[in-house]
Image 1: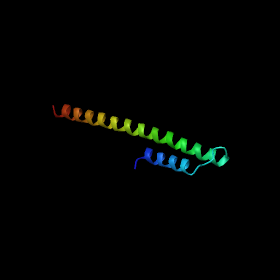
Image 2: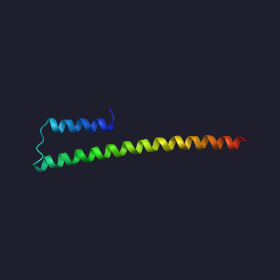
Image 3: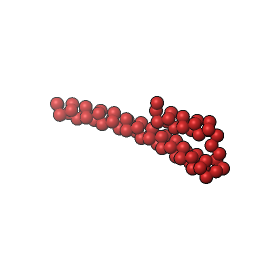
Image 4: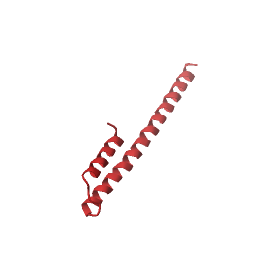
Length: 70
């Protein structure tokens, strides 16, 4: 289960439990879940960017190795 799926599951639990968003506890719970959702999306974006950078570094390393061989 991915991080975004876990947050979606948590959101579903909060909604399924019928958390009252007019109470202090309900507001805090909703805010925490919203923040976790934003964090999960940000982490996914960072993972994608890191993966792309890793591929570029690998290509540069291969090119450098070819230059060294020449």
